Image 1 (cartoon, rainbow, N blue to C red):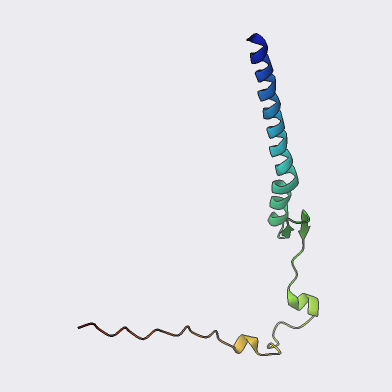
Image 2: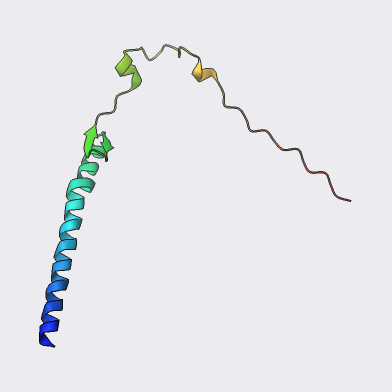
Length: 91
């Protein structure tokens, strides 16, 4: 009986150490880098575990901010959903 308790003690100690190491690895590889990236204004790319810099489209195309859009997208308004006609009253 004493051997069984000793063996179980080591099994649970090993499971505890493995799970603690897993949580620490998760935080070290994912959570803390993501927080640092977002704190400095970057965009976290979780698939590649990298921090990217966000650029506006005006910066990339070198287009001035005060120029209207080329294709007039800003002037288009979304269509309102069609309203259903009220149901006739039952007699």
